[in-house]
Amino acid sequence: MSAIFVTATGTDIGKTYVTAGLIRTLRAQGRPVSALKPVVSGFEMAAVEKSDPGLLLQAMGRAVTSPSVAALSPWRFHAPLSPDMAAAREGRTIDFAELITFCRDAIDSARGTLFIEGVGGVMVPLDSTHTVCDWIAALGIPAILVAGTYLGTISHTLTALDALLSRHVAVCALVLNESDNASVPVAETIGTLVRFVHPIPVTATPRAGNPALSDETFRRLHEHLE
Image 1 (spheres, one colour):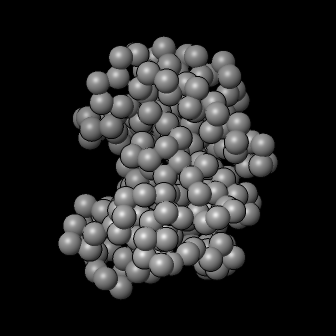
Image 2 (tube, rainbow, N blue to C red):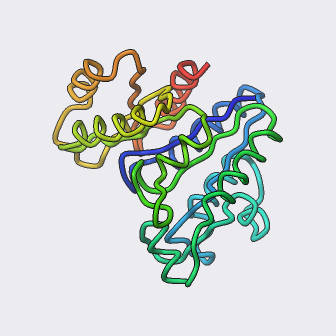
């Protein structure tokens, strides 16, 4: 069994899109795969089908129900804020030790590949003292870093990567998820990043493009993970 954490340079970059794409790729190959999205903010049960937990459940071929969402995402918050702030709005906190135990139990019991999708970006706070980076480091599993292709992404990506590597997190792939109306050609962004991140493989995927092209991209990405 292998477990991989999917994180990003920031929020709304494409973690769920990438995670769901990889899930569908492995399922198409007949391989066992599962996913968790333990922490989610900006969650509305009325729009659960389009929520991150809902999209992951659909990718796994599972029904989107209240129990299945609760099992996938135990820490759900209404406000679209960082988890620490969203939790505070509800008079709650995220117990970091409990979060780690929840993930480790899932890793130990999973069959095949388990993707654990984070929340927000690498350095978003979970509570008063822990960030997503602390979460990944505590689990001791490799990570996929998802970034955009907007102007400024190179600095954001290298900063996020430095934060992960400084905590001895093994980054197994960098995925550039194409941003809407990006002013810089994707190939140029990849060319620059490759010089700084080698030997980490860099893959680009269309954010909302040809499904066949997206499928091929995820097949190539999965090859990097094996």
